[in-house]
Length: 157
Length: 162
Image 1 (cartoon, rainbow over the protein chains, first blue to last red):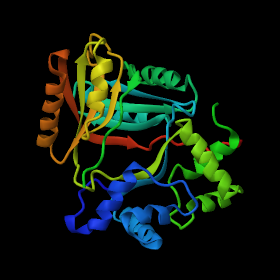
Image 2: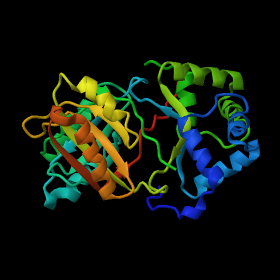
Image 3: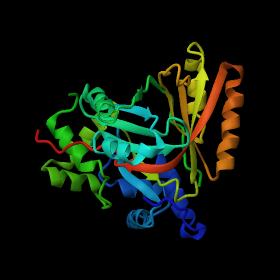
Image 4: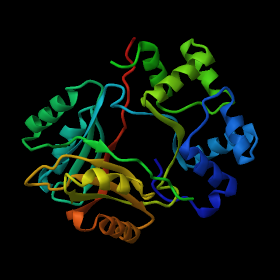
């Protein structure tokens, strides 16, 4: 995934309008690009071509349905560990070897390794966290979500 | 399991994204041997049940200039978090906002809010705005910046037979 900002001139006004409008939703109909294009004053094929280009230049990370793992019967859990500096790479290899580890970030804190465990079946999360503790000899703090507050984030364009 | 075998195949087929063609749902239907009507109806039903949160485009916020982000964490009283959490979650610079358990004595924070901005300074400004909003209901807070991505694969449904 592209992490560096795109040059400002790589997006025109119509591109920005597309990114803004389609962050909120995309029609579930037979010709959704034609339908979405109407609101953007763009033809069906023009809209498709622009989205293809936006994807190619890395302005889009995903386009399609967003699924809720928990609603599917799966589980997610944010976890954190305090990993001694000298053991960091070894512990990282042990943690990342688990396919349940979906994201893992090094963070500037005493708790310096933060990862998300994602599993399809209840119980897999706890099993994985326990296995990581056994393999590394370190405590895995579990921060499952108790409540989710409205996600209002919009990328300003 | 709350989704049937056909829903599972539909989720597995679309979790990487929709095809960029004039009739994307018809194309997905073709992959799965279903009709376009059935694909649309199933996606609508999944959306109604909250399994599909939305069908949308996700802008790459790094590419669009939002290169700085920090995980802000707050210790808010359990009595007040139900009122304050939604206010923080509604801020347009906060992407994820959750109540999570504390891990005492190591970790007193129970409200997590991911803050995005174009620079570290902007993230700090926004963090101040959250602190002002929480006021005396916040007993302690901190922010953790990511220094390295160690893995990023996302949730992938295993392609398992019905």
